[in-house]
Amino acid sequence: MRYAILADIHSNLNAFKAVIDDLNSRGGFQKIWCLGDVVGYGPEPHECIQLLNEYDNLCVAGNHDWACIGKLSNIIFNPVAAEACAWTEKQLNDWEINYLAALPEMITEGDFTLVHGSPRNPLTEYLFSDIDAEQNLAYFDTPYCLIGHSHVPMIFEKNNTVIFTRLIEGVPVQLGNNRLIINPGGVGQPRDNDPRAAYAVYDRDLGIIEHFRVEYDIKATQGKMRRAGLPETLVTRLDYGR
Ligand code: ZN
Image 1 (cartoon, protein in one colour):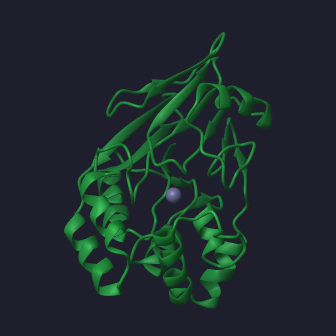
Image 2: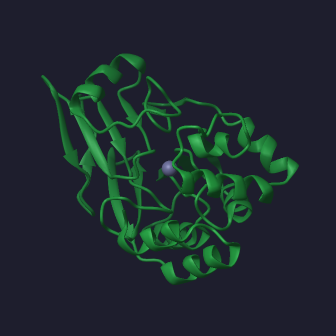
């Protein structure tokens, strides 16, 4: 059984489709674990929600998913994020609004807990430091936790202390006794200075998680964003992956 671990699709259908194609070229997958922020920032919220639901999937709520429908305040958003959020809200139909509203904050399946930000604060906490990661171990019961939100691929491993490392493309993480918090990176808006879409695969039979990057048609997404009138800074940041 292979799970596609996808975070922060952010209405970027070109990136999302490129990830699906890449997954299929690497042996496919049976289920998507989606770590929230399906929408926000990008030009195709409707199509991304549709595509996700063509597959067997579990999906948690992200801060953008709920801010775009008014379920979470966007007061902490910067002005361009808030502008994209307001644009997104106008695109969504009733079914999509209800779908996003019903997404849970946390899901547990097998050995994994799925959240968007962190187990302690699923919608809004950014996990960057080993200290915060260590504190968060008390907020989930499974051996492993999958997060998104920062759009940066990384792994926190609890041994005696919590050690932070970057997830490296094509280098499998062998699951063992140590508890782990893993971020697969962002599909639709990478922020680690690499503009390629980021994702991970959990192969349950092999007991490994592997991180992959894939090029997508950034210009196509940018053209759609400009035609939609989305903020130019959101358009250009896709070139740089930050
Ligand atoms: Zn996000």
